[in-house]
Image (cartoon, rainbow, N blue to C red):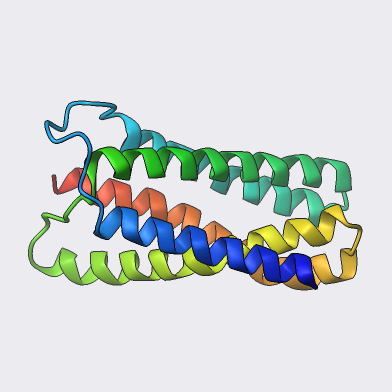
Amino acid sequence: MSAIIGIIAISAAASGFLCWLVYYHPPADITGTHLLFLPALNALLNGLSAIALITGFCFIRARHISEHRTAMLTAFVFSTLFLVTYVTNHALHGDMHFQGQGFVRYLYFPLLISHIVLSVVALPMILITFFFSLTGRFPAHRRLARFTFPTWLYVSVTGVIVYAMLATYR
């Protein structure tokens, strides 16, 4: 139980740090010329995470446990790399503002808000689901994974969509 409390505390601290970084920290790259590929890399990593998640889901449905484990670790690695590049991008460039006008704004902002809220929820869920798996608590792993998988997949897919919308209306 103390490990789960620790995971939740670390997740809350990480979410607080990201909130500060995105909304309050001034960008370090004032000229906006360094590592401009990071948003596209973030979208790629989110997309690769989604593919690995779907692959892992297919493997577990087919009872291919070893392949499922590999796919889920791959999704975790892609999501971890995403988090590193996301933090780097926001430390350098700050928050990007959506430039779209009209009806598209009514699509973009609910999508963005749901993406942000569920990404905060997904982080401890993912870590606890992995904890249950790594400690051999498979019944608890299965129960939580039923909620973790769709949440993580939604966050990964909507991350790509948010990037595409920002890039389209830049």
